[in-house]
Image 1 (tube, rainbow, N blue to C red):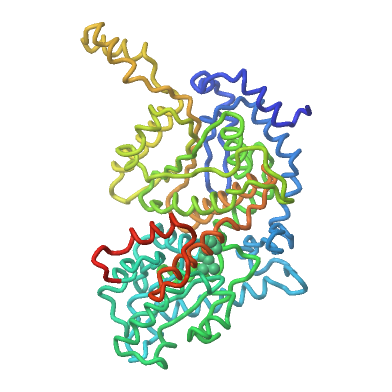
Image 2: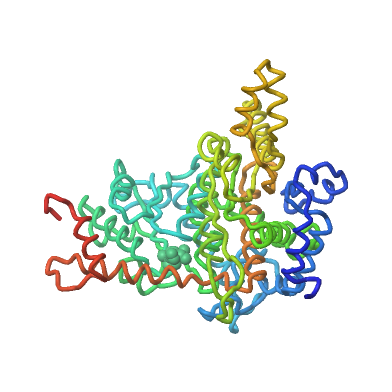
Length: 541
Ligand code: F6P
């Protein structure tokens, strides 16, 4: 057993004081406040002593994290099962940096050219230079994509405030209700669609894109008119051309950018359309600042590394079973959904990169609700339920201008929840306060177990100055790197997603089994029975 083994970490935890006891130590408090890329991280409510943090840092070094980190910024083969490099960080390098060669090609030149084209398209749409087939200016843009081709752009567009260009709409779900609701009230002569799909083969996006194409044609536009109304973001130019979108209206993606890491690529076009290219560049700058911090900060002050190590400690040593992500900023309502894909698609794996079973619990079941809404819905289970969990709070120092009192309440509640999770409330404290309020001792005794909060729930608090493009970029990049560190700690490939494929194959079979001729068998008797039960009962299709 070396000093840096998981067993040693578990032995340390056996003698761990409670969070209540740990919170009183001022030296610990100061050491667990760190800064990076404009984010202040308060890790003081993590259930670690400083010597546990140091043991975790030693564990990270033993797992190769010190050298491993640099791989993310250089040509690499971090995704061996798909034989792909992982280089989303290249998307936010500055143009002045030295060329970045991958397979003999300078990818930084290709990125710069793609972002220039993206900026031109966004500006044409924003300025009204881009005209529809009838000569009308464009008022609405429908972004059709799912997963990584949806969550990032949708989050950023919502977070950064009302559009200052054409109105953005997002269509992801294959449920026809989503298509109908998105198109309701739109004028096809003033609408542009973006078919956003790295593979240009994702079923949901294909079905929705075909429906919107028919909508254009049924509302008086001709096939020839479509080029004035369709854009694509994809690696598959031929497939886009077959759909009717010529190469000059396609923005590129590359194999070395995973879908859930693609916001920084031309996939961010909706952000540039809604807010302008300068805002998109600020998003890149925020992410770049966090990249720089991740590469250069020492372990004890490295935000992505510490966030990952403390969550690793919580899950694999203390035994937490889920992670609540709680942004106290209404503009970040969609952030938990974005992080769910990032965390759960990346690290929901059960074998190591070389195919051996991982002995530890991997992946993080991440969920979350914006604060304070969650306090009136889900937090009861957090305070008094029996499942161990950890949490991340995000709080912006500044909120809505002129409504500072709202921000005071929000601040108070955010920190109150973090304190309640950490400290809990003992029966003795409850009985004392009830008795002081004049409640009979017998009644106080009866109520106390119902009012008790066990506490001892670890959390991190991430403080940003305000929700803007720079801070959002830094926050997202922080979590990308945290996910990467986690993958290294578990020894898994965080960049493939083979599990998703099986569901797609079964979905195709069950779609075919619904064909009128009915000669394609369903998967099983139970699948057949479920299909029958799920058909409309009036017999109509
Ligand atoms: O669900 C799997 C997945 O491949 C995600 O990883 C990806 O972000 C999403 O589907 C969309 O893929 P595409 O951009 O190829 O349509």
